[in-house]
Each structure stands twice: as structure tokens, then as C-alpha cells.
Image (cartoon, rainbow, N blue to C red; front, side, top):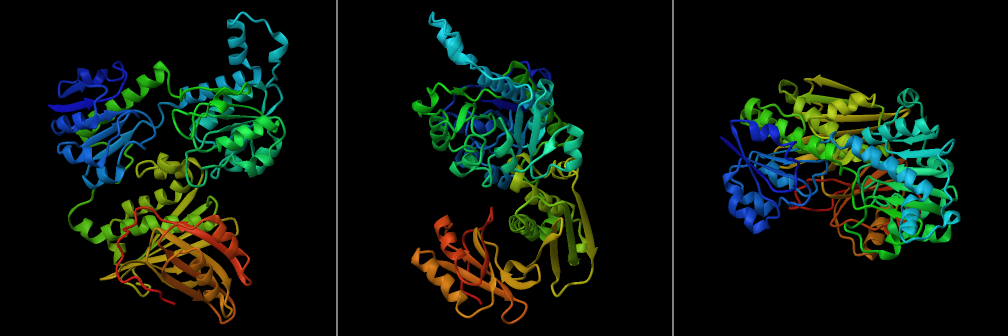
Length: 541
């Protein structure tokens, strides 16, 4: 008998197959404190939560029997994924169950914003009859810009076409062919800003999308544009949005998500040109039943057949394979993160080459980790080891894996190349016995870089004083350099400099570096899941 604990308000209809199964016992206990959870969690094999329950490292310490944590929804920000992975606990979610609910809520917000329905209702409910005060606009032949053409963005586009709207779609992985099939126009973010009468956002919250709608982007928008956000709070800078509405640059906004929830900015919430709802995108009876049904079905499959479809964390590896390949798993993720950040755009072709003793091992998991690391830059936590290859195929991308017994100067060597039209980024890496993971090649430059959380990449001409100038600027801002690597092909030609820093640097530092004579490019590179305790840190040139 497997014991399942449900701690949030989750549809009993959706949980029915768990209730009815003879091998599962379900306890539903809402509104428990963390202390109360810690006292009982040790007797359960699986935990089902929504967003209210926070699954902390401390809670997992007491979950000695836990094999599965299920998020009845999409986002897993409330679950300590790293700690669950370390303890061998599978974390699953229900990524597709909310699609229709979120799509329809977006359309409801679009229409409400266009026709001022909420404010007209409020006025009428007070006994007023102000027909002239609520003159709206039609959707017919207007331009709708959709930022993010995943499942929800695609469904919004299909429905908006029924209003005979012109659809502009932006997504790093949207191809011309797929746009044509959807009957929309592939566009850039700037195109959407300049041409759209309405803009709706359907992207995850990543470093790239956080604060996407800021003063600069708003200044590019068509005057009188209307904004809808039912995706993630934080995509829109709310202070910039409110100011733009007050100044008339933006005609209105409909918001279902906020930077901080619940929001406290009453000036924004009570503005007559803003519609606000309390994160209702997935709040339909059908959606709540679907998410519960999906996680219930997967929990049964995991315990009965070991079948996993929607795991968001890395499965455990063991035995001889664990000893041989485990050091390369984190390296593969870091190689992918570096390559996609240096490319600065979605690739159209991916090449992975394994050399040396690695060719004798099963590298399929390593390949998935590399693909996931590439896609996560744009898709955030919506991509995992299970769906990474499917997402790749879904967006029309190709990848090629080559295996060669040649050692390339190292016992094992991984080389990743990302292509975008006529641009390519190549990263070479290895694990050195006694020294750990190393990035040993960036394009044609030989380097020796330990993957660290904060890296600064500089492309420059090999001229005297460049290293000193860079060091002086960082020193002026009290930025400590952990290590430095310089690579060049010819004396006086193009060169690169990669520095590991003790903390993330601000844009003002980047701006000062960019004006240095002979500097071509400067970029902050950030790696996740890095061991912060580094030994023998030194400056190496």
C-alpha cells in the first residue's frame, strides 16, 4: 500500500483514480504549517501540492519515504528541486493541463480590455448609466503581437484569427515554416512593439524575459497599444507600465500576474485603464480536474511500471556508469549554458561530439542534459530531461551526435557547436583527473577555465594594457577577480579574455568596459548548479 499526501486544494474528481486504486491510500490535509508537515511527512511515499505548500530542504529532511513530489500545475518554484534530486525524489508536474484555461482567460482579458467591460459593469452596478464613458475598440483587422509561441501562445493565435486579427508572433524557436502553417507572421520583438495594437505575453520568466517590458521597450511601442499578461509576473516592469498608461503611451493593460503576489500597488490596481485578476489563468473547474488527473495517472505509473513522462529533475544513475559519466553530467550542462549565451539567439542546428573513452559509454543521458541546457535559456523550467528532445523536434531543430575514439589530447573530450545561419559557437571541454571540469576551447581560442557561477567574457584586440584597464575598472567597483584566462591566435590580432568573478556585476560596469579602445564585445555569462567552494583560485594568464 502506497501512502499519498495531498496538502493543497486539489480536485477530488481529478484524484478519483488514486482514491479508487486498491494499492494507494490518499490523505488530504489542507492548510498545514511546515512544522505540522514535518511531523507527518515521514510516513508518505508521495506528496501532491499546488502553489500554497512550499517544499523546503528542511521538509525533505523528514520525508524519508518520499519517492515522488507532484505539482498539480506547471510552475515548480515552490519545490526545492536540487534537494529533491539529491535525495533521489522524482519531481513531476502537469505541463499541458492548463493550456485551454490560460488561453481562454487571455481572450477574456483581451475582450474586456478592448470593450472596458469590468469598469462599465462596476459603473452600472452603482446605478449609473454612462454609455459615453466606456467607448471601446474593435478587434477586427487590428494587429495582435504574441510574445511566446509555445502551446498557449499558439492557441491564442488560433482563436484570435477568428476575429480576423493580423497576428505577429515572436519566439526564439519559431521558424518561418511553422509561422506559415499557423497563418501568422514571424516577427521580432521590435516589430511587435512598432506594429501591434495589442500585445500579449506567453513566455516563462527567465533572466532574458525578466523586465522585458521596461521604459526602453515601451518607448518603441505604437502609441495607444494595449497590453495583456497572463503568463508570469516580472515580465513587465509595473512602475514603467503605470507611468506609460498615465502618460498615454499605452492605452490600457489587463494583468493576471504580478511582480509580487498579492500585489499591493493600489494606484496601479485602481487605475481606470487597468484590469486586474488574481492569477486566474488556470482557475477553471476543467483545468483543476485535468492537472489532478495527470499527476494521479503519472504517480500510479511511476509506482507500478516505473514509467516517467513529466519529471522536471534529473533521474538518478548508479553503479559503474555513475562512476564513469557522472563528472560529465554537470559539465555538459555548463557547456550548453555557455554556448547558448555566447550565441545570443536560438540555434538552428546543434552538433555534439564525444571523443576518447566516452565513446565506449552510453551518453544518451549526457546528450539530453546538453539539449536541456541549451533549451532552458529560452524555455526555463518548461523543458526537462524527458521532453527536451521532443521540444527540439517540435520546433523544427536538428541535432547531430558524433562519437570518435580519437582523444583530442584528453582522455575524454566533449565539443558542442551551435549554429545560427552563418554564425557558430564552439565550446570544447573535459574533466581533468585531480583538477575537475575545464572549458578548454572557445571557438578557435585555447583556454583553461573552471566553470564558475559568474564569468565575464571579453573579445578584444591583443594590444598592450588591455588586461590592466579591465582589472582597474573592476577594481574601482570592488569586483574581485577569481581567475583570468586570455586566448589569442596571433600577436596583435583578435583575442578573448574570460574572468571568473566573486559576484555578478552591474550594467554600469559593462558600460564602462565597452568604451575601452580595442574592445569588441563584453558579456556576462552565468552558470547554474556550480559548486561555490573552489580550491586553488588564482589569476592565470
